Length: 434
Image 1 (cartoon, one colour):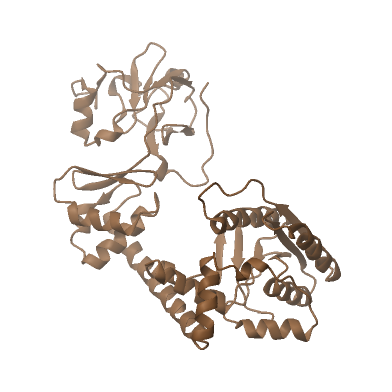
Image 2 (cartoon, one colour; image 1 turned 90 degrees about the vertical axis):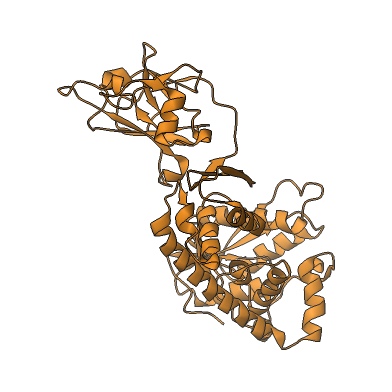
């Protein structure tokens, strides 16, 4: 039953170990095939069953008998009233398994889902109206937050796992909730397999086809977005030249970096936008705005942060909490003298500010300057930077005020505002508000 194709990435392998048939067989097979690799069993104590303490003790005993490591985490809290117990347990379990794997020094985590689990997932997703990504079910291997979550038995029938366990005299836990008809998967399991015993391989095959379709859609979207988008803006006029299927596919891929957009939102946006229209659509966690034939994402509005003092006199990237972005400081010309950047005040617009785009231009009202630069209305609130004499230095989205430029023979630093979506994911803070 061991699968030699499972990715090996380090000297420690973790196994998600509930104590049930599937995970018991997987832990046993992994321990026997380890060949010097350290194995650790990870158990999540959900606290939902009166037998949960006994199950944790059973799992620890099995791990000891197999001469593998053992770690257990008890979930805290409980599902809120009206929340799905399954969703709460799943989210908590994923977080606990990740943390225990990291603590054990494992970057490979094995899970015991098999072909029947995949077939059930495909059908449940189909009943929810899922697209190819949902119908693809569970991936055989997937990297998430530094851990490879792998399912080496995803193509194995459950009957093979049962035969493996019985042949070796393994003992496992029978969870009574597996027969509870309150849970959708159990209802499906009780109705499907007795009526259609041969459906499992066909449904699992359908999930594999869906995975290929989802992979192909992702490749097409990446190729389309490479020419019609940036992380901050989607060119709607260019999007509209694509076929309806490709336009929908590209739009969903672009939106996925910001929000989990329902299909109804994608359909509305494609149907309602017209060239030159200024429109807005609410979305989970924020809003979408069509402006000057571009589509923009704006995170959920919060009250502007209070005034703060910054030192931007050294090159670096300085994230600004609450403003959804960061100041990038680089040695470049034209720029501002470092001494003038040592004590800056950061705040939102107060009204009456003027901004000068270039040395030879005329200062304009900030509103007019934003309009001329094509800065969308929802990005005109700031932040603004002022020097110690309260002279305007820079405006997020517009850049540096030309009146603040240093002389050519002086050391100069340039300022540029980066939206959160344009920041490298690993970027750390280069400075802090005082």
